[in-house]
Amino acid sequence: MKISFYRRHRAGSENKYLKDCLSGELDTDGFFMRRLLSHAATLYPGRSLLFTPSCTLALELSISCLNLRPGDEVILPSFNFPSAANAVLRGGGTPVLCDISPDTQNISVPDAARRITRRTKAVIAVHYAGIACPMEPLLKLAGEAGIALVEDAAQGASAFYRGTPLGALGDFGAVSYHHTKNITCGEGGLMVTGNREAYVEACQYRLHGTNRSQYINGEADRYTWNRPGLGAALSEPCAAILLAQMEEAQAITSRRVAVMGHYRELLEPLEKAGAFSLMQVPDYAEPNGHIFYLRTDTADRRERLQGYLLSRGIDCRTHYVPLHLSPMGRKLGYAPQDCPESLRCYGTLLRLPIHTGITDDDALWVAEKIGRFYKKG
Ligand SMILES: *Cc1c(COP(=O)(O)O)cnc(C)c1O
Image (cartoon, protein in one colour):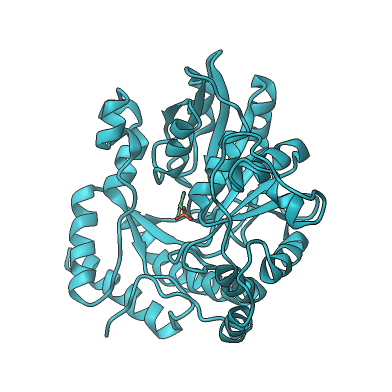
């Protein structure tokens, strides 16, 4: 038996929407983008939304709104994908890496607080595994320091913090629809903001630094180059696929959350016996089943467990090389012990296969193999 790590969910309306889309002109922010926006508006009430070709670009749009100047700092966790740090560099600022907390692998609020200086302009919180960060302490921290809070909600589609969707609590949020994420159109992203002025700026940044979106909406009879910008609109075929996926979001999420529940139930006895620790879900977080992971006691055990499962056809994976440990992090002046928890997590975290194609039998099979590994020691 082979169990794949990822498998994209096939939404029922994808083919039909794509066919309808291909009979049209594929014009930027056309028919399917309008449908997608009105669907998404119900998910993020009161927020302005911009779909982009990636979460990376949604982060870049968000950071561009901060108008960073050389030497301005933005704090973000080291245990992360490079997108947020790249967005800060591309926005003209300096990324400042902080550590994570070992229960959720999310940003450590005390460690972020320690790294605030007079040059700090924002903090970027990553909702790792689709588990919400402690948003109240983070909002308090940002409010008291007078800095922006950006949510890297790349993994957070259909996950919530006390009932609010991830991405909709900070000044900016960015969601990913990459093929490895729960809801996908291959490559796609979304910028979420409650700041109307920033939204207008981001609209221009997204369309070549022009007011072309006003032109498309019939609010201007021509458009001009007003500021620096990019071409960062999500294409119509992607919008068509994403609409089909979003319409099925509830079914996708509930299946993934069920798989998570099975893993937890099956593996809890081993956890209680001290074999490893399972991913924790704080009471304020409503997860989306994006990732299910365990953390072993040592990096060596994680490596042996991973090898054991891989040799039995179960695709399981570690995660990020912490940014502070990477060649680029070294160039920015970091040393391995600067973020010790990120370093431990790098060695000991193992992600199990999770997607809508995982059956109850698959979950049982994976859990049995893990049990067997620990039995033989
Ligand atoms: C996937 C991911 C990204 C990148 O998303 P893209 O849509 O591929 O740009 C950024 N940050 C985190 C935490 C991610 O998981």
